[in-house]
Amino acid sequence: HRLNSYFPPEKIIGAGVVIVLAGVGFLSVMTHLESVAGSMIGSTYTQLASVIGIVVSIGVMFVGIGMIIPNTISIALVSYQNVIGTAGSIFGLIYYLMISGFTALMGLLHDGTVHAMPNYFLFLGVLVHVL
Image 1 (cartoon, rainbow, N blue to C red):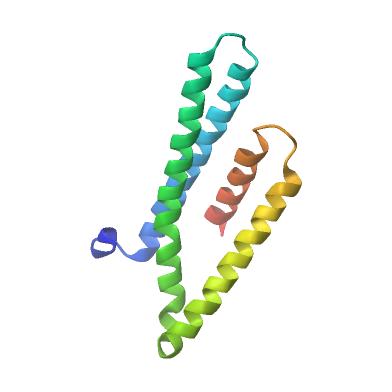
Image 2: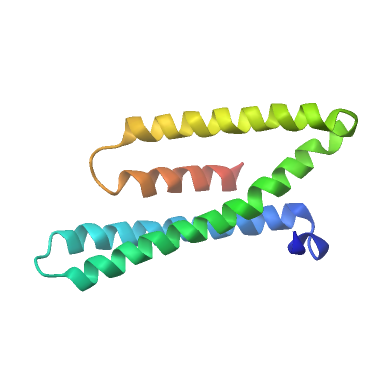
């Protein structure tokens, strides 16, 4: 909210996408370290560090998502000021249906390793950046 007084929503969305991509990149590195550390015997410190890194990277991704979603919805609702409640409800429905679909697709892509999720997130992040 505070950023909106200094920057237009489009700039905040762009920064949010960059932050999400940075978080996804960090998540990819941390999951690789986790799989390497998991195969090492007696590497509790390395495993703990990689798990903390995974949690931090997901937190970074959510900061970016928190910058993207509200600004995207506010831009989308500008044309519907006379029916903003209905439009907001419909956009919310579409948003949650998309989340359900992407989550179901993630479930289908799961291959039993920790690499499927960051690769999928990377694909989605690049797709959002391109679009």
